Length: 333
Image (cartoon, rainbow, N blue to C red; front, side, top):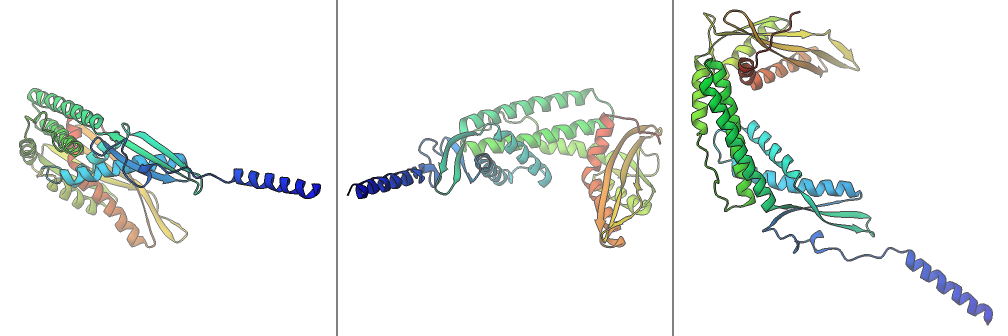
């Protein structure tokens, strides 16, 4: 009898120890699957993240807020004027990235049964609102500085560069205003811009249209690069003229020998854009690395030309304007 009694006690102890080793599920917070009463949507943007790793869950929660805000700004800013798709995208990325710095962790919960971490990230609408208001004031002050410098500048192309700076600032302002109104739909245009974006663009284009540009190409791919450079300069609004040009743009590509590796042709090199003024003095130089590959020589060459065309069409105007305000002598070979 004593043996049976002892055995029962031992079994009971084992059962109790076994139960104590089993994870006890703590009730999940309301925000895991629903809204948070502590952080209501009227006062906060919220994002949730769930992952096996706590840091990953935090990153996912923060990213969800960034995505929400970016999508909302994108929708709101579609009505803004003068912003290119690329510029709008860059500005959205800038603002959502900055907003990440203001996001806080509002709650964490570890589901021991499923071994997952749940995180609630929160962004105070009031804090974000103050940030965007400060951005608008800062941008307007910077724009005023550009326009003040414009009055002191006599070189036409340098004037166009200052106008371009003011345009980009006002495009950023549009984004800040959109972000502000996403945060608070009732937010007024707190500091109405005294500078019309359309007027800035008109004044810039008027200067560019009167700037006479000659183009030339040398070295490898000469004919193709000549065509691409002329097309890019024309699309940027410059007046193409070989007679008494204000500036001459020279394009060249230096390519390494074609290499074949594991059935792929690789081509590397450097694209160089150089600008000279009417006296032949070097004004500026810009280089880009080139690297393409394909399964045939013809495809490799075409991909290289596609890359050079993209570079010139997307960057030519800004590079020419930068040369006019920040001249740097070309490197002599």
